[in-house]
Length: 88
Image (cartoon, rainbow, N blue to C red; front, side, top):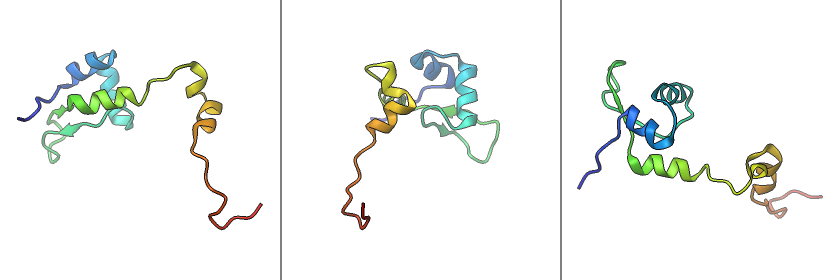
């Protein structure tokens, strides 16, 4: 069974933004992954897999505002092992 793809307006509604914002994000490479219906045609539509939109939203869930701040993100990075040939 194949999943029905969402159009731009449906995906934007699921995210909670305007369709124009989602279009802008797509051009900027920001929004969720999308499928171009005909890559050879600039005028062809796009589709969004509902699972991709849900995963994209889930990646952006935070417990506090400090969790997505630059300092919070640097603290959340995995600790790299110092055994990779570096000396302190």
